[in-house]
Image 1 (cartoon, rainbow, N blue to C red):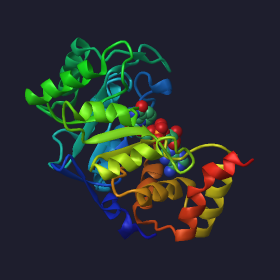
Image 2 (tube, rainbow, N blue to C red):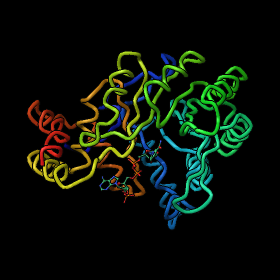
Image 3 (tube, rainbow, N blue to C red):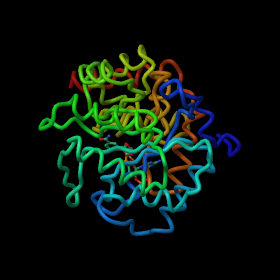
Image 4 (cartoon, protein in one colour):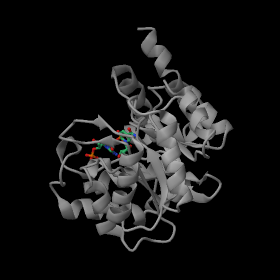
Amino acid sequence: MNKNELSASLAGDISLGEEISVHRLGYGAMRLTGEGIWGPPKDHEGALAVLRRAVELHVDFIDTADSYGPNVSEELIAEALFPYPAELVIATKGGWNRPGPNQWTHDASPAHLRKAVEGSLKRLRLDRIDLYQLHVPDHGVPFEASVGTLAQLREEGKIRLIGLSNVTKEHIERARRIVPIASVQNRYSFADREWDYVVDYCESNGIAFIPWFPLGAGKVAGDVLNQIAQAHRASRTQVALAWLLRRSPMMLPIPGTSSIEHLGQNVAAASLSLTDEDYQTLSSVPELVGSR
Ligand SMILES: NC(=O)c1ccc[n+]([C@@H]2O[C@H](COP(=O)([O-])OP(=O)(O)OC[C@H]3O[C@@H](n4cnc5c(N)ncnc54)[C@H](OP(=O)(O)O)[C@@H]3O)[C@@H](O)[C@H]2O)c1
């Protein structure tokens, strides 16, 4: 791969809700915060530089959440990039709170989501959020009440498109009876395929699937990844990302990093083509793991 090929645009484009087109390789801004996704980053200027470099590399989709920090990730995005380039889409989330390092608590109640959207608008310095995602269903709140609140906020012009995260197909279908759903964000990689059927459902229904934790884990996955990466003179992360990009045209990976060097490597995955054999080998990793 040469330097001329370093552009997220080489991953092709994807339509969000048939309204917004973005390149199919985004950036996840969770790791820009302090340890445990808590507090400010150790290197404030470095975090701003990563965000600016992402945009220079034509990344036009940045994923964040009010709970990353909390607030820190959204504030850094605004500090680094406001006024935003016209094509930049910032996707944030609410409904999962961060009361302390590595702690999560649910609150997707209508009152909280309203407050959360107002907070994100302010921190991101926006009049309207392009993509607002329910971070996770809250079992203490009727799912329809959470989604209905986001639908109302959309009617009020505070949200353009609505997405879901950490959901089943049943959740997506229930939500779509209330409002169009533009994206679904679940944990997914070549080695971690619990949500294969959700990827297929999203592809059939024109919904973007945004995988988090795209590398997968475990020894078997690591060995297979190493072999293929060596053959392509690529990194493991690049191979894992290339597999995702090939898995579905509705796939929109958002690899996260706090390192400019890793960011460049991840964006370079946009132009990495796997052979059919590589793709099949990686696809069969869950079966290999199961057979050992
Ligand atoms: N919806 C959800 O519930 C949910 C949950 C988790 C994450 N997310 C979103 O998804 C994004 C991605 O999450 P993730 O869990 O996949 O990743 P992540 O948590 O953002 O972190 C990726 C990890 O891989 C490392 N890394 C990244 N690029 C690398 C490279 N080229 N070489 C070596 N190491 C590399 C990073 O370390 P360095 O910083 O050192 O590069 C980091 O430790 C997050 O940023 C967030 O926006 C959503």
